[in-house]
Length: 149
Image (cartoon, rainbow, N blue to C red; front, side):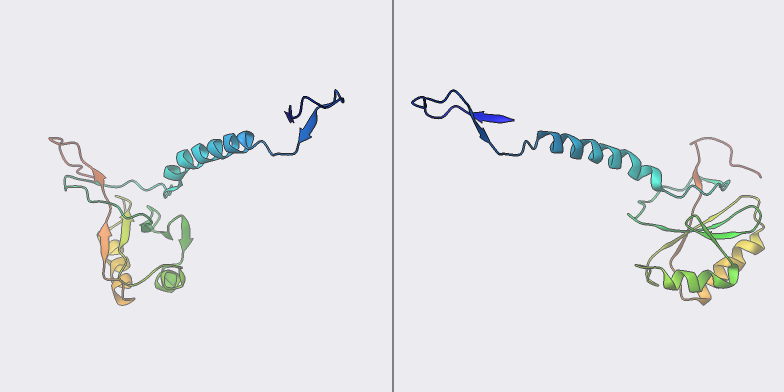
């Protein structure tokens, strides 16, 4: 609480109260929340466990909000972390907000997924009008032998 030491001519010994809000605690709370969100934001990427193969290709810049389509080892298909039926894959992508046919789709497939299953999902996406597809792999260590799995 703040007080004002105004006129010294006052015969009263009482101090006048000023009614102002102290914003310092609010600023402290906002800074703590800012730090929490800055730490939590990178952790909000896709956490669907997929054993990706490695690649020695030069990594490319990832967009701010990428759309991931994943094929797990049990051949289940997921968009982000939400599992969808294969027949509903294109329909689900069409109903997503901010999703256009010109946006890149990042396709992640477990290394245990047969090549034919991967091609089937690629064909479904192409038939649905999604032609901009990038394959996701782990970055290989330079000079290391590629995985033979």
